[in-house]
Length: 191
Ligand code: IMP
Ligand code: MG
Image (cartoon, rainbow, N blue to C red; front, side):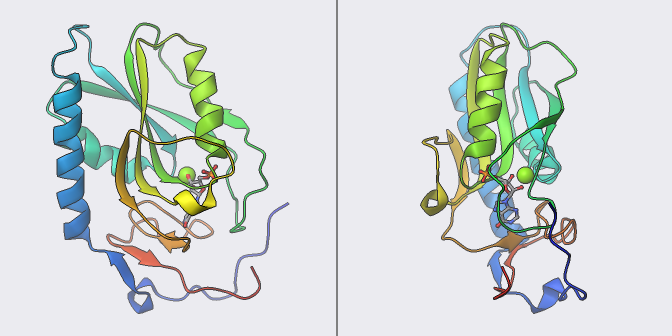
């Protein structure tokens, strides 16, 4: 069940910046270098496959893909999300599967936020069934305090406290994804 969206969405400009677009760009560049270093010597001869989790990871993936010098291709999956509510139902359902086979390929799952871990542990299990040569996880943000299932990312942009954030692909009720910075959504006592 989806929670009704607030009647008025506060402007992002009034929200505190957690990470500026410049800070994000610097951090993504470092992650790209780490991935280049980790995969540079792997000689599969095939591009790395980045699998983004729609829609939140789209912007991070597009920046990360260009920060990696090694050839890479993209695919996308979509799962049932928080909808308009800010709390997870706990249930994860695949809405869109990958388009191309990943057997024998080096795969990196790309997420916007690793929160409870339910989404990524579900997706990791699903992707492992396809027998990739390797499977790693890159997440722009990590909220370790919120974890309900044990899962860690191999590449983390920033580790953050338990705050609800928007921008750089992340939404509240589908709003704010295009905000260039990552900002803290004001806490709302009704949630
Ligand atoms: P998990 O299954 O709880 O790890 O869910 C992760 C997903 O929840 C992310 O991909 C986001 O779509 C969403 N999410 C978690 N925290 C936030 C947040 O602070 N802002 C926006 N979306 C969030
Ligand atoms: Mg998401």
